[in-house]
Image (cartoon, rainbow, N blue to C red):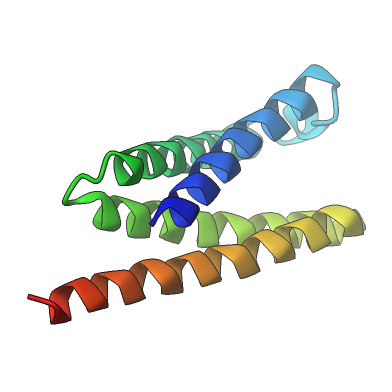
Length: 125
């Protein structure tokens, strides 16, 4: 399950990087117009990113509970992708909408792979 683990880590790091870039470059006008809402959004995305990184690392370490950590983190990612896609679509930032769509497809494929590997391992016992 190396590929899903690396995907998870890459997406988590990218999420933190994207928010850092948005904040440093002043591309977050909601800090002035909707400060509470945007702080909750940043907190939710940051928790999702950290969960993804953690899940990826424990998958690489082959911890027995890594699959569950991955599924929880990816569930958080699915929610974040849906809500964030709506925000960027509303603002007409279509390139980011497409990027989130690509991430969603890879997240689904990775999740299916994790579930199939787990199913195979269960059947092998």
